[in-house]
Length: 266
Image (cartoon, rainbow, N blue to C red):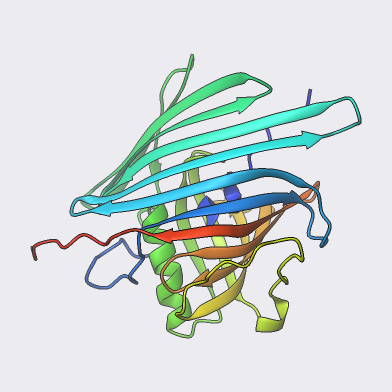
């Protein structure tokens, strides 16, 4: 049996060194995006699943629900079904989440929280049937939606390359060190002929390449890399995840922008 293969990095990894502030961060807009997953980057790559990424906002912070479903045919008679469901809430200084990951009908539940108090950032992660894991994160670690805002801020400021630290709930339950490099527009993967056109955001966009390493063990080789097209409102498209063993792509299939709350000034 192969180990659980999680395609959450298709989205969540994009999401680096400053805590989120509504006064300085990019304007990440709440939205619901659906993606088609395929195995490989070829124009005729087989479809293996879908992603629904639903980011909503209220005056307290953000809520993200993400539902990933895949089915991969390893041979003519052997198929592997994988799923991951995330439900999370994020404020300026806290992040709480629950994840249910399922492989061939066998679920695994993980719950966690990250809390910033003063200059310290601490995490607690609990997998079903296991004792809680408690540890300190590097203070510059960003929470997921804040990390996307920081990514957009740095790109908008003209940074060609920069590091980022981001807490990840779905892949390692720890901090990722992300090395971000802006690419040339010509590097953007073309739309697939079979895809229906999607009305994309009208603002700025940047093609980026990112490598992901464990943030608390920075002497290791990258676990995987991600290339994507990042829009200035936080929407992502043309994602390609390379693990060394396989390549998974995600293309935007539909996009709905949610209403932005009107909140009193603090």
